[in-house]
Length: 245
Ligand SMILES: [Zn+2]
Image 1 (cartoon, protein in one colour):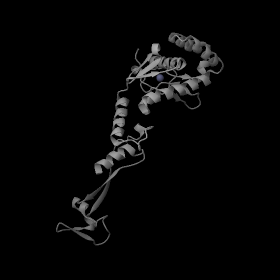
Image 2 (cartoon, helix red, strand yellow):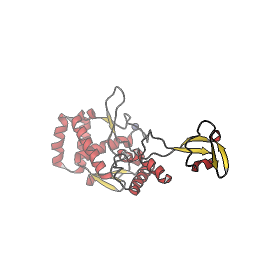
Image 3 (tube, protein in one colour):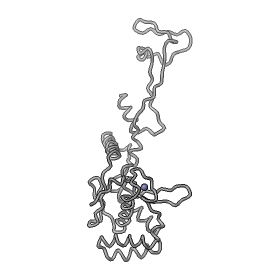
Image 4 (cartoon, helix red, strand yellow):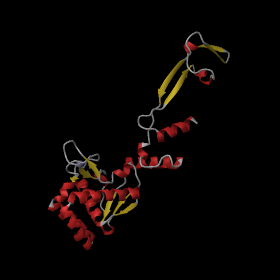
């Protein structure tokens, strides 16, 4: 049962929790039902015909280092899932963090392809994602970039006529005429609000298809804010994983 306790601990423990193993020396004292700790004074125990003095018994607390998986399963109802499904999810999460799936954009179907899933987006969501994916693909090239100026954009960047032109061009490529004029008219007046709205819906859509977990967040539009500056938006995925359609 100790094995299952350890596995349960790996799945449920929080970062501040610790698993300890109590070691008793000499080891034959471990099975003694009336022994809890070396009692003070002249106490002695008889074990298999041998006398062991209380002061000769040592108790040590050894911390057992473990991989904690609870954080890796965030967003999952861990208490409502069967054990094997939880272990499967944890394994999948680790696999995808170690070797992240590729990301490709498919304008013809207005969809993203990630880990064998096709995520269909609205024209504006697709255009916004395409702009950010392009920034990331041509940005600093660092796998662990947290939103440098080359890889990311501020929401207010869409106030810029040149940026809205880029957005228009992406939508044009999708061949959806009506949407283009209707949607972009709104962006001209409230670009940053429109961008935030598109980002929230985009991320919701990606999570609805891929599920939740840290690996999924690498494909969503993340927000980063350094002290004293505006929030910048970017796609955290390793740029090497962004591949042509
Ligand atoms: Zn960067």
